[in-house]
Amino acid sequence: MACALQGFADGVSSGPWRGLMEASTVAKIAGSGLDKKTLLNFLHQMLLIRKFEDKSGELYARGKIAGFLHLYNGQEASAVGAISTLAEHDLLITHYRDHGHAIARGLDVNRCMAELLGKATGISKGRGGSMHFFDASLGMLGGWAIVAGHLPLAVGLGLASNISGSSRWSSVSLATGRRTMDTFMKP
Image (cartoon, rainbow, N blue to C red; front, side, top):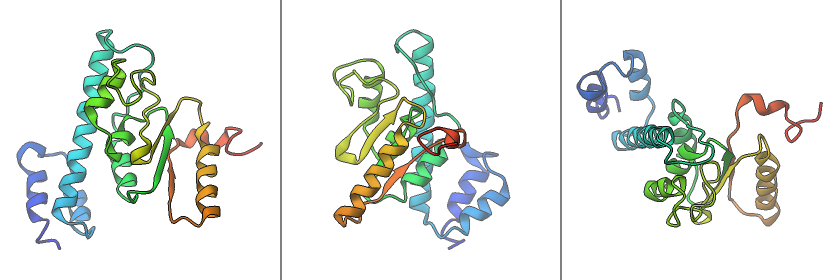
């Protein structure tokens, strides 16, 4: 497997990604058992998310995006890695920093940007904005603006799958600070 990934490792240690990863990281990736095509797909998704977030931040600073904008810069690998484990029929529900999750799940980036710009061609017809990316056809059941408010919903999705005998998984994303919210645990 290490030989199959040598081209990937060489591309990261030289070329446009030179210095992006330390040699020990490249060695871990080479020993991961993932093929070159999968790894390059992950890298492509992470770079796409970063470019989307950078452009969103730029447009927000220029006043083109109204309301709130919660960027996902620096967290791209979390979304890509976690969502890559989901099957097509699995469900995803996340917090208000949802752009990276949506893109990793396969939502069209043009429709996502249209949503941020408040256009009718957006994924929620321009009415959801930054915190409410949603596409039921892809199992992306949205970002939720209420801190930790999506946790009971995720539990409900999991329970519904269990009761119905479905093999569908529900994935939920939360930050560690949300552990103390009432929706997660009572003090």
